[in-house]
Image (cartoon, rainbow, N blue to C red):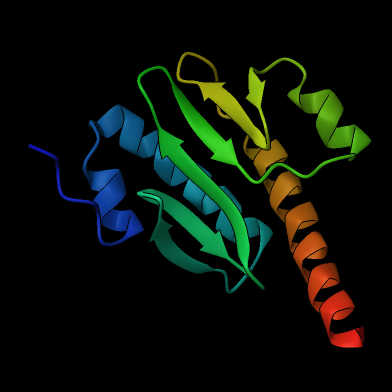
Length: 125
């Protein structure tokens, strides 16, 4: 039997053990500190933040938090992510290491600028 999909990020976080929930809440807080007024939704069963479209997603797995929406071509962010396992547009933050909240903040700030640029480009076409 499949578990019900969470209706919101509070329900998503509450579905995990306390220690994991605290890490998820710290990610959520870092995202909000990086960008004020972001909309929270659940997409693809994951906490998602919206700002002029999809901004970033995150999800807890067995041994890590997956963080999605990594910007491409940012040398500072690319260098900081080298020590983590990465996938296409994603990174894994292992539970046995501190969550890099400052890095998450930088990622979100870059993504906000990227999304704002897409809106301006669309409007000028």
